[in-house]
Figure (cartoon, rainbow, N blue to C red):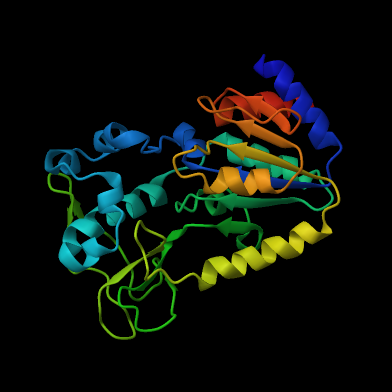
Length: 275
């Protein structure tokens, strides 16, 4: 069944002049990244937080930077180091190749904060990170609208995390403007202090690109319904949608193709059909 659906997807792509790639956490599973599906999935990745009974929605919360800064940075610092060390799987290159075949290329819309698309060679000017990026920081106060790279030469964020406690060893990252604690420029749960200027600029570039594309096709990968940002964006385009998701592949009748496969497996098959 999935092969026939992918053949339909290939036909849609052959007629397209632009590709919007929608990506949720599931696209990174084939690279070895956790997708935090449910509390138990999250706790498997972070046993110290499981021992404390801390759920993902509780640790991914800006309040922790005020009340438990070493733990907040322990969680985000570990993720920062993990994402820096992770090599994107071959499916990212396949998506780049598909986009390069089309007149207007590809644009990425992702809820992931991991920077994997950039590591795979996608340009910053063709990306919307709707929840921000762990590779960029801001002030926790915030004292200004400043957003700066976490890998800047000064101050470089090089997290050292105790695996037994998930605590980051001081010194913790500081705002270079006022000296207050810094935090990732990520939209967290219950977050009123996220600075969205970087992401809003990305949205503006997407809108400009979208206006040029006459025959758009959307490929959505690994985007679930628990945090449906990507699914909503992909469906809102009103164009054919190829939804690749091993657990939740359903697409409304007449709106596209649902493929019940993982991202890498599906993309390898799709590339073979297009070649």
